[in-house]
Length: 134
Image 1: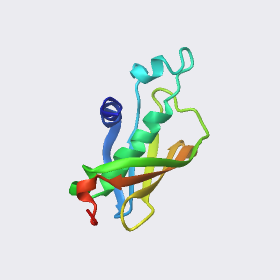
Image 2: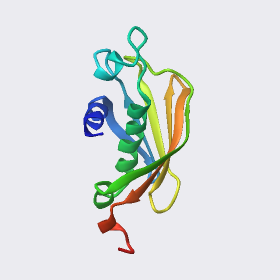
Image 3: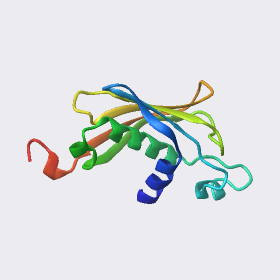
């Protein structure tokens, strides 16, 4: 996922906007030459779901303290709905909201021009060394 993460980070448009201590927003724009579009799908490029999920992971990490964000492990993607194609050069607004006090569950919504393109919930665990009970 590191290669995907690098592409997602490079597609960030400006800095993330921390709305409050539980919500962050970020705009992303993937250029037409993004390698993920070449095989997904030739002649009709669509942003792969794994890239959309990685956008959510990056934003979830933005909400967490530095010591936690470096040790978060994605465990589950729940209630994923991909409602609209995301294509090259679109300005995508991603919003991530923490669902719990422990900052391990996050709701993510991606929109284009005010229309929901996808939504999902990300659930994380902490690496063994960072668990309070370890």
